[in-house]
Length: 587
Image 1: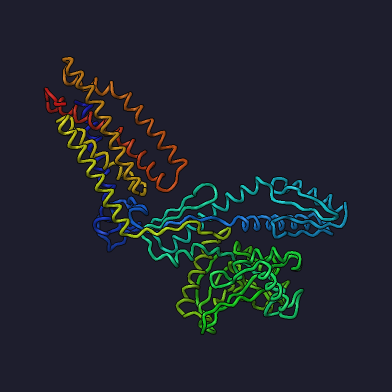
Image 2: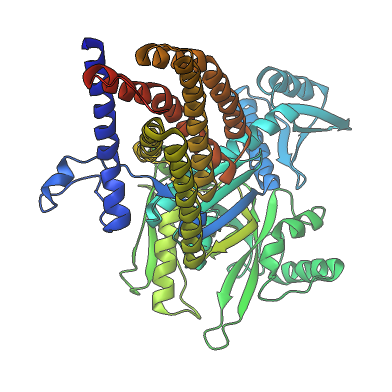
């Protein structure tokens, strides 16, 4: 009796604890009340006692937005080779190596120009010592050597780009205020994003897609310096026209010239001054709402980038009362900014965000303090649109830049009615399936069947409680996984009951028949559950999305099945025989 007492207490405690974990989910889905993470004084008293975790409904049950995103790895490699170039230049300057220039090409290669063999030996020594893992030697012609990113470093750069993109997306979505998003890696180079309950996708997609790469680049030619620098304004227009005709581009609102910046700079690689690139400023006609793109010739190397950004917030220009974005640079960034502006006084500095030139103010003097602002420009837009743009720009800058532009490879919007239909269909199938099982077990095994039905109900309770505790997501495949594990639990009880029948037919006592029934069935039950657990682990490791939801629910259900089918039912039988002194059991 003593051993039975602690087992009964264990079963009761687990049931009570499971109900306790599910109360917040019941409040959320049935009463529309969410237990807050931080409880306030005016909240109901029981909020202080309840956990805040609830299980979530997946996209297929609640509706929402499903996206598969790809990354522009060409841009990622471009940034990687640019960083290697800057590091090499710093090391060469540190070692006082003179007569050497380092540049990058539009096909993401590093080009080193040197005066003679003596300089090349010094450069080769630095590259071999510091960049052996990152750069591979490609070729040498005259006094020029070409290097490219090593394959191992390129793979590492890609992996980091995906990780950074996922983290940046999480930060942006948290600030945007969307509850319960799903952001997971799909394969090696894609990202799966799901937003349950989201129907208005326009602004959300805009925030996701914005790279938010900020840079300050010196203007060589453009509207501010139309006749100065290495190229005239008319020359820039001629180069752009030449590219459009050569590529036979059909430019319109859906495909503006700004979308072809990379191809344009690759096409003009031999004509553009070394170390420069063409970017565009977009302006909109207030009457016709037509967009005009003005070319700028900028130094490719940025004075300061968004990596030096510490904070960003929207505000209003005190002179024009127009929305602006204020930002603060880190101490290191502020120092770089002060030095760069001091070296380029009286020149024009373009403020570039996502390859779009927002403005190009003149540097009147050295700028200290690390504070600056971005003018949003209001031509052709309402005040509300400009303010919304300022808010979104501050948000994406504050949450961090994406390593490269994201591409929408797949997009699917699931309506709430479809989600409701899925819930009803899934719930109906679950209820009907369980009722049939309950009916069969009760008729065929009578009292023992009712014990199995109790264990089955507790199994479903424990699965939902575990999902709530770990804030898991319940999907339609998850419901299927739940039904499958409930079937496994019944199968385990059937094995036990059949062995108990054999022992009772052999004339053994009720207690001995129960003991032998569980003992003889245990190995088969464990084998069956382990086989399914291995399959679920494989699905969890290599699957994604709905497959992972199925695997997670199945794993939780299998663990709960072992507990209820073997432990809970045994406690009920032992309690009936020992505590209630039953002499017979119908099975």
